[in-house]
Image 1 (cartoon, one colour):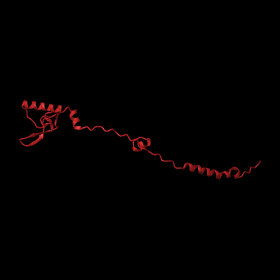
Image 2 (tube, helix red, strand yellow; image 1 turned 90 degrees about the vertical axis):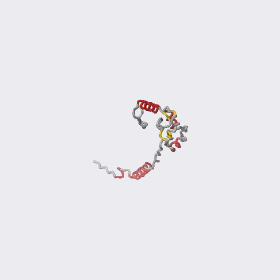
Image 3 (cartoon, rainbow, N blue to C red; image 1 turned 30 degrees about the horizontal axis):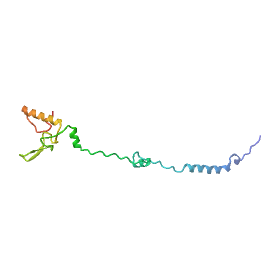
Image 4 (spheres, helix red, strand yellow; image 1 turned 180 degrees about the vertical axis):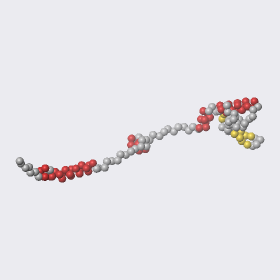
Amino acid sequence: MSINTLSIDDLFDTNDLFESAAHFEASLAEVDTPVAEKIRIRAYSAEYYEWIGQSIPMPEKSPEIKAVELIKASSHGKDCKACDGTGLYRIHKHNKDIPCAKCAGKGYITPIDEARGKAYTARRNAGLPMDASHTDYIH
């Protein structure tokens, strides 16, 4: 039987050992290089429009609309003749202004006001007790 006499140097290539360690450390250094942080841009913000190279779109100005006039037109309102559209009725005897009963102090007459006026007239003609409330004679 023959005896193999191998040394550790023969089994392992110790000359390459230190070279491989240096190569491994260099590869780790490449992995550890900091990666640029991802920049988050909120959609439709000023930075977004700067990033895509466009100016920020501005809405077109709409013409100013007076809400009271729209309400009058949409409710089929007509100016009240009893108060001349002011909503106040003048009692000269007492030198006092009170809310107009015909338009309920709005200054214009709607279909509900017309129905209330008809109900008021019907109650008065029937001799029923009267109430000064604007809500008592609706329909």
